[in-house]
Image (cartoon, rainbow, N blue to C red; front, side, top):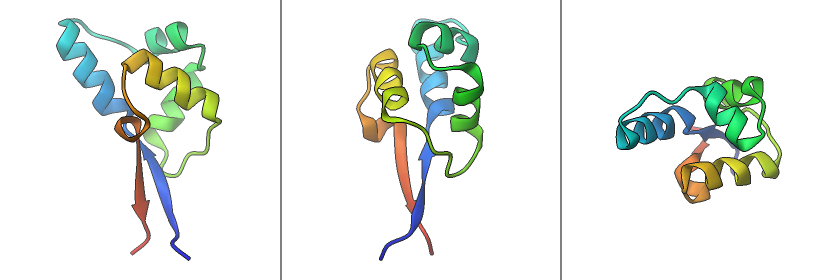
Length: 78
């Protein structure tokens, strides 16, 4: 059995979108546009192995115009 955890690449996507749009994008703005709470987005960005529902993943992928593997990375245990 392969164990590991998921890492959400929210910070990287925020940085890229901010750069591409030449403006600062906050977690609050992402929360407002996606319907995913600020607390949830913050936890996804900062807590290793945070567990969330697929609706949140779907909404964030739509907002960032990305694929799931652009948002989520699997990190296997050593």
